[in-house]
Image (cartoon, rainbow, N blue to C red; front, side, top):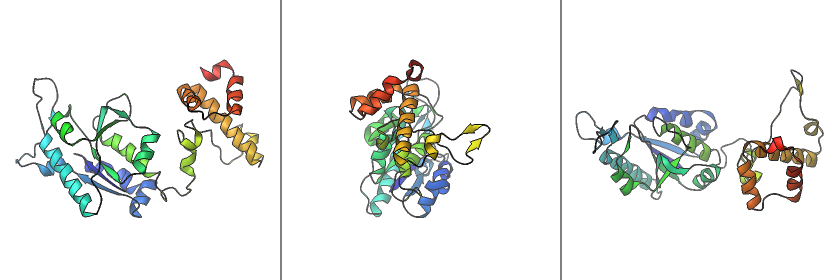
Length: 257
């Protein structure tokens, strides 16, 4: 898998390229990252990549030509590796919300080219000509697309085979289909007693079926309390069992607020 990022701040991507599980996987060649600075595709002495918006208003707008040239260079480099044309993704608050399902879809592909906007926005003509998809982390605005791209890349890369030490780890993540899209249950480790707090007896029982049921019920209760819409979605998709429904029905009202 190969990710390309068009960014004015390529050094920011050292976080996923060099550190943690994604950094180890990058070093092993499981995935690769390539940054393209649009300033390298300008033709004036000031290496200009932005200008004032037509119609007036605050801020500056990123120019179409340097961005399009950077995308073309990225696509050409991918072609030299024998990879097909990559989707071009603009990080934008107007885009589709990125979630675990989207991360899985990205992990199943050959990668993408991320456009990390800055300033007031990106010239719409570049979007019309080059962008395949717009994605957003949520209903808030960042100073640029780099942080959003980092999060999206990390979420996708950790799903690739061989990235996590335990291949089953990702299956226990919140929102994963293996958990029916629910939140993960609480976790405990040594010591058995910490500052008066004890590890739940079910986790110490050694009875795998009891442990699995306890984790399922904790997941249901936590999701009902904090993200009830995920319960509704799982129910609509037929992913809740009769035992799940009985447990949810027995929860006190405060657990499902």
